[in-house]
Every structure is written in structure tokens, then in C-alpha cells.
Image 1 (cartoon, rainbow, N blue to C red):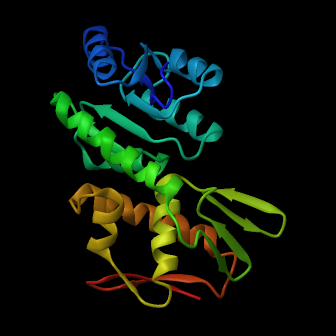
Image 2: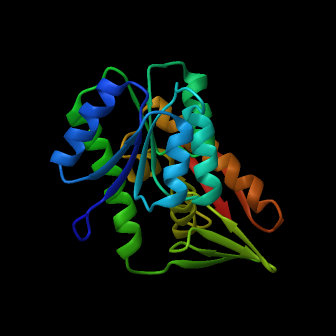
Length: 230
């Protein structure tokens, strides 16, 4: 692997598609390892370091959702893209609840996949080098954006990358309205239906975490967005 090369865990049970994707990503300078079922992918994740996961959903032995849940137990912030033949809204929302960063439906254009990968990496790379305030006090909570973590008493609560990005936007706009479309375009790069529903899921998760501190609240502002009140 070349220095600073992005490493990708690719798990796809369609061998023809899998090999095609692997060759394409390698040609685009992504160090890519391919596995054909969720159990193989999980064992590889335990042994190796990856920067990004691309997971098929419908797979033998262990499906993509189960694999993503296992990965999230080990690493709460690694970006995950699901490959899916499904287009049902409930299936996509289920993936976002698990912590997916993006979905791409089969059949897809290779350049579209590359664009989505690059968009996710731009967000995560920026989060590592961004300057300015990255630690916020939220009542009894301390939020460390760089560590994707909330601290309260002697406990640490790990956040996903998107949860952390969304909470930082709320913190930067504390006690004023965070425009819904601005948040979508900043974090998800697109304000489409699925991204909007994904953001609602993350807002709900943040509310659940923050309810331990009664002085902190995220409220809906109808037709506009959200407000973090401290």
C-alpha cells in the first residue's frame, strides 16, 4: 500500500461485480480488498485497518446490515456505503439507523460510486484538519468533535461521523435556528428525500442521548429546521 492511500473493505457476493468494482477502485488508487460474504468481511475487519467499507446488503452467511452492526461495535465512525438492489424506503431508513453514510442502488454507474466515495472522504478529511472550536460544553456533557465523543461524568458516548457533524453544526448555531436544507447540503451534500429522513433519524438519536441533561434540548422549528437550546 502506498503512503496515504485509502484502504477499502469491499464485501459483495456477486463475484463478477465484486471483481469489477475491485479493479476499478484499484485503478482509481484505492487499496481495495474483496470478500464474498459478511462473515469473511467481518474477519478481515478484525485483522486489518480500513478507511472505508462498501457492503452489499443481500449476502450469504451474514448480511450487510448485520456486518455493519458488528463493524459499528468496533469502530463507530468509519464510513459505510451500502450497495443494494432494494429501493424500499424502510430498507434504506433501516440502513441509516445502523449508521450508513450512503446508499447506492444497483445497477449503478462506476463514476457515481466514485463520486459518493470522494464526497464522504472530503467530509471526513475536513473533519480531521478543520480549525476552530472543536470542544463544546452542553450542560453536564462535553462534546469533543475531533474524537466523535460525548463525555458525561465518567462515561464516554461514541458518536458516528454524521452524528458528530450534525451536533457540531447545532453547537455552532446554539440557540438559533439551524436551517434544515443548509444542514443537509453541508453534511449530506444533497437535500433529497432519503437524506432528509436520514437526518431525522440522527436528530432523534442525538435527542435520546442528550435527554440525560434536562437543560439541553433539540427542538423542531416547523418549516425551517432545528434549534439546540442550552
